Image (cartoon, rainbow, N blue to C red; front, side):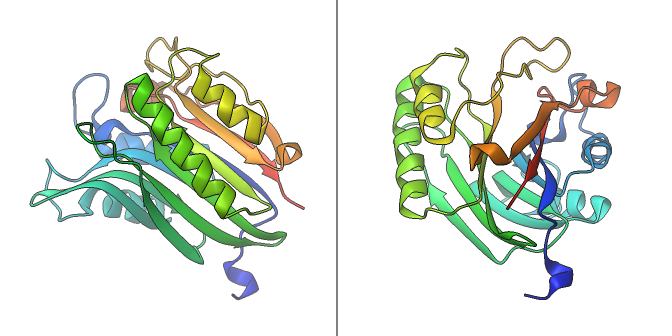
Length: 239
């Protein structure tokens, strides 16, 4: 891959549940989500609840709109496909990825879930960014975290970022303990609900742990309106 297509070794990663671009006022307004993504100025943004089913534009209409308006490269990781469009995870990035893999985390009888595992070339080597959105029940999340860790351990990479909406309400829950035992502890940042955040549903973990620098919640006025989740950002330094 050409040097011009590599991400820098020091970069900003973000995770954002966009709630289908429906804000806390109940209005569908993808331009507000574009503004939030632009404010964060991240090199890679993992997205959850990207939803093209209700507002037209084809299977990937909403993701395509966000990519075109931000100037970032999209990778889709839909977990639900229908005649009206797709729904699920996605990644936007400043450079195109070298690889992308979609892994099912489906639990029978529950909403389909999955992993989007994307690899990028950086100036310090390969970087994997794994985006997910786990289920609402504790038992469901337990299975999904077990499957997630199995996938990560079978595809070990020196530089790995795991991010997304983990739907873990309790900061000392078993699922978070298992992930922290593999990645190391990360901050419990309150992101939900966006108008008055009380719960830390959204997370970013990094391997190696020492690569993780500043991590925080993006709390701009438009972010409080654009979705029911606030996004989180992390500065990481590879190599």
